[in-house]
Amino acid sequence: MRVSIVQAPIGPMTQEVNRKTIFDAMEEALKSSPDVIVLPEMWNTGFYPERFSADDDYEEESLRRDLSAFAKEHEVNLVAGSITVWDHDTRANRSFIYDRGGALLGTYDKAHLFPMGAEKTFFRPGEKNLAFELDGVPAGIITCFELRMPEWVRLAVMGRAKILFVPMAWGLSRVPHMHLFARARAVENQCYVVAVNCTKLGDYPAMGGGGSCIYDPMGEEVLMTGTEACVHTVDLDLSKVEEAKAKFDLFHERRPDLYGKLVSRHG
Image (cartoon, rainbow, N blue to C red; front, side, top):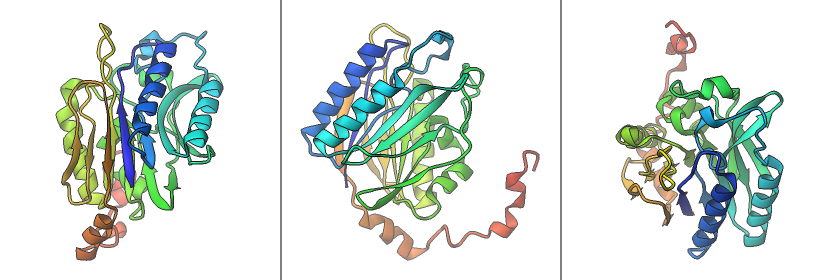
């Protein structure tokens, strides 16, 4: 599967600029004939909850319409990152998945909100994960901070997904941790991890530190970016998933009867 990642510079509530940046980058990605284009986290508003107000218009319907039209016109799958949306009287950090025909395959609301900053104040956490297929390839998705949650990642993959997509707005100072977690999640779930970060726009404070990465099921680095805005395309050899599991299938070697304390907050 050919995957294009968009590491885009995103500003705080610079919605029109951010939209143009993302769609221009997707046009750039098309030159490599990808099967799927992957976008970062909260690319419409940026990860700046302190800039939000009750009067914000996040233009969800317009963005959804344009993303669907793009996927259909160019016959490309989209893991369209996440955008800030209104959900009744609060907000959600919501990801959208589109197939080559522009059909919405599903949405995913970030379930584990970042405890630093104000995400927990302004957003409602999601309550379920999302499994989907792109061109018949089973996949899962989590968002940013959730890369630190191995139990949630295991549920997102469930021994079935061959690719785990991770839209992010991961801070520069913690990028080494992000690489560590992405590699570990790939190895322990025997799948590809495609982690797509954003980066700094102009003189605005950085919301994401770049360093987008892809690891294969054996933890080998497939892609590593720097801190600058970029579009990269790589081919994922999905046969490596089955090769890894042929040695031992970690999902089936689990003993869930021993893990009861994991569902308790207090152990």
